[in-house]
Length: 507
Image 1 (cartoon, rainbow, N blue to C red):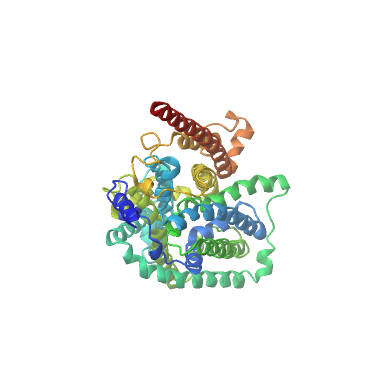
Image 2 (cartoon, helix red, strand yellow):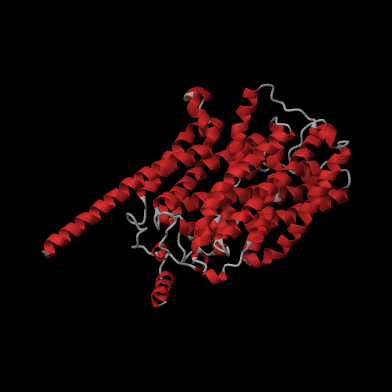
């Protein structure tokens, strides 16, 4: 017991320690299976999930192709979600601390910051959705909002009215950060009750206005050949995996509260694929119905709601979307990046400062451009960041399961001179593996954003981008395992040499 108390004292006095990053003691872990199921159901019920499904319909899939793609994608991402969640449940540590085992106590800032920047992007997207909902409501009552003089250059792609409401909603998010996370609890309760009801109401409206499910679900696929379908399917599948690629890394932030491994594993299996598939089905049905009702595909639910005739109905819907989006944004896109930024300097960066940093980067990412069309949403945003996070996932899982055999020294995770210090706090092998996992996807990304011509590189190289998460995951994982195996062999040889020298000197 004395040794354990000494370990705790060493951890708490380290500059790598803060209350937000501290290991959770076993007696304070209270989350059960249904807590994790409820978490995923709540996280899945959001506007981006709806847009995820509807973007596949807009891209050319029929209803069952879209649903199957989403189900497969979420089943795949469930695997790294559970594997990375194991360390959180076993040791009570959050993601930035878990990453110290493979990247080093200082090197862990690299995956933490990459993951945090992606969360900033999601924060920006959710803030744009909430702000645009405000705009659609206000312009019904203040029509002049739609015809305000243009303040921004055309290249910004941002009208003055939506820009004002976006900024107002951004300020509301920052106010919640200032007040603290406790202020969001009632909004989360509101979301948990309202959004499922609103989603079902929208589904019933689509079925009624679309003259039943039959005509809606009979909408054909736009793909004429199998080649056309698979050309769209594989990038779309990568996008589906990429949708939760952030959480597949920082899931220890949640599983550190688990009563047992069984609780986090079963809870995620029950909550993630079914909830995503069900809510996506609603998005698919409603989007398919818009073709029948309006003669064209409307993939954005806010644009769709703005077409309703009743001002009062639109206003109620938009206020509800705004409140729900605010609740999701703080819970999903502020808490985790705030922890990630805090890992840079635990003594100087707290939750509030981390939240403000997230908010500023969220604007600079230009979220209105990311979701302006489904191609930008899937091919630019979801796939691009999955090319960064896939390699990190491959390294974390390889290190924990194949190099360390699920055994971590918690005390050393908080020490500058422990076994995870490597060279000056950085594990160069993890950084090399990370870079080599990212590089294959760069040409395809540059082509996607039109920075280089389509024929600038061989087709097979550019097409690797369509499988970005998978390419990065396996390339980085395999390279890391090879490098670390040689490192461990060299380490053993060095230790044996020291023992031999010591033996000779004493004899």
